[in-house]
Amino acid sequence: QVQLVESGGDLVQPGGSLRLACTASSFKLDYYATAWFRQAPGKEREGVAYISSSGAIEMYADSVKGRFAITRDISKNFLYLQMTNLAPEDTAVYYCAASTWSRVPNSRWNQADVYEYWGQGTQVTVSS
Image 1 (cartoon, helix red, strand yellow):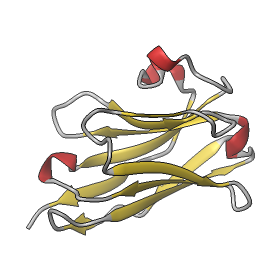
Image 2: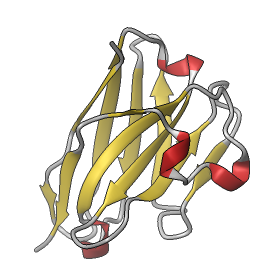
Image 3: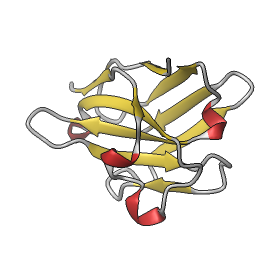
């Protein structure tokens, strides 16, 4: 059974940094296109960052460009989301997701229905 497990969520002050991690049981993350999504209370789940299975393509939501980076450690089978200069509007539950497509069409990377596997989420709260 495919499982994704996120970790690293925390309470952080505005301007701070945080790194989220996601690992998978029973499959190699670099065989799949993977992404980070987030969902704030009362809002729809939104795509934050994406990386293709080859690692050659990365996509980011406009709201996080230049602040967030999606990376992988293939040897450890981990996916990361490095977040810097965090703001209160970044507060949300963050999810990692994996698609059986090796490469999701660029126009669809941030659509949740493209991803078959999801983690349980990790809470990020940005507040002073």
